[in-house]
Image 1 (spheres, rainbow, N blue to C red):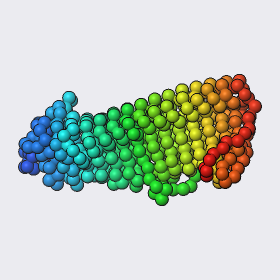
Image 2 (tube, rainbow, N blue to C red):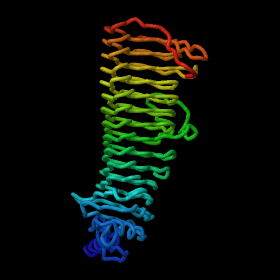
Image 3 (cartoon, rainbow, N blue to C red):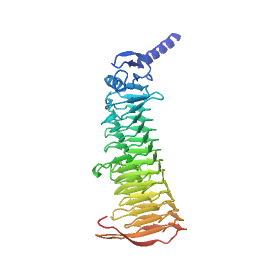
Image 4 (cartoon, helix red, strand yellow):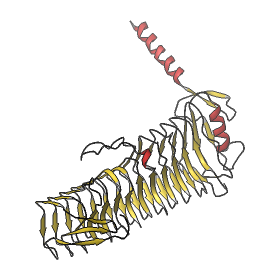
Length: 422
């Protein structure tokens, strides 16, 4: 019995030995068996090219027939041209030792600093700065980015249509023109715990023509978005020109914080989106703007201290429900010029706006069970939309709203004149 047990132990040991990976030099020659946690290639030179450089490590990793692991052990690498794309078919992992891992692309005139064409690759603890083109391009499925930083670049991260199933965690994007751009066709992408700060065009840009929209059926509150493509979770957007810009690409934003973004926090220019359990504060322009969209849901958000309008919708099928609006310039504005569109404004609390709390312009908007309290303007202003082509009468469906303590509690009617077609 003891001999059988010893044989089993020896067998397990041989299996573990067989599962070990082999370390290689930069020419791909084996250096001996090691555990999987040990890197295949260690970057020890800060130069652009030559022995021990990141460029040589990537070329060597691409030649392997097994998964590769590159570890950066130098503080700063100055590159003069784009690094080779990662093309290892089994995937490549890149990480950095503490205090290491900055790639400076200031002397690279064009192109991407790093391109990931290897499926299921990962990049962790890497910083890319001063890219005149793009910091990182993800052009393969299942890629993971963790604790990366991209700053002072024209475009921080490009997710191509091939980047399906990509996950980005705990990344930082500072002072880029655009932080993250997702191309039409990408799907199943998750960004979680991301910090976007002071990006001069937009933090997250996901835009396509209407023909590329993911689904057309309107979703009820609580239902999944039609063909949801991107999820932005637990992320922070601070002092960007625009936080999130979407058009015809269904996107979920949940438990995120938007503070002091200059033009808008979220801009939806078509298609579906859901923003829920998030905070939006001190936006310079309209905090959430929705135009010509369907299946847009704004649920359980807090919008406070935004100097202009907190939420504005125009010709969109949108549900605005269970939100708290405090100390904004104007609360909610809904503009409707087409009979097929009926926004729903339900169960919201609107307090202390500088101007009007609710403004309904044209169409049949559902306004029910809202608490509209102590605002400095009119509780509800209802305006017929007047254009060169005619008049769209405002006939909101009002039910069980509470208007109390406002400058004017009684609904006010009038006209809203708009030159040309709406």
